[in-house]
Length: 211
Image 1 (cartoon, one colour):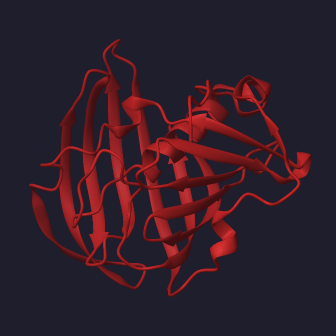
Image 2: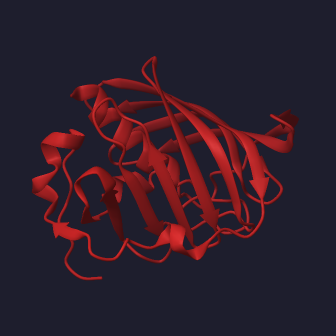
């Protein structure tokens, strides 16, 4: 269950990555173009395959976990997210934890290291160092000129000394307009409180206060 919790938290950290054009605490890795891509996410040596769809201001992530396949739908300028569980025909609305904005500092991309092709996409490599009340994040981040986060190799050391490593990489990136329905909760789905799926996803979800 700890692995599931780390996977969900790392996925949300990924979604909150800022782009070089708009560094804000409420960004969702908001690239300036629409695209779809395959993603591999590795947390402390455990790998998870997923797929994502993006339009400026909103994202959809399908994460393959051992028992469920949750769909994360997030929107910029909104501190609330939706987790859609198609197998259960349910949706859970939750508040994004404040600590997940740890990579949203205004000077995050102050250390460009050079250019590199990542899976056919030209990127700029950045060194990342960020201190927050929760701990310290360090690593490398590769962004395209449109703000697409193609790769990241990072380490987070919590205040209690616990260290976690995260790697993600995008492949088969297709740039273009995405279907708006991808970013909407299907009609007829029952809404559950966050505590109803905490054991299923292995993470604590803060309840929403308002939309």
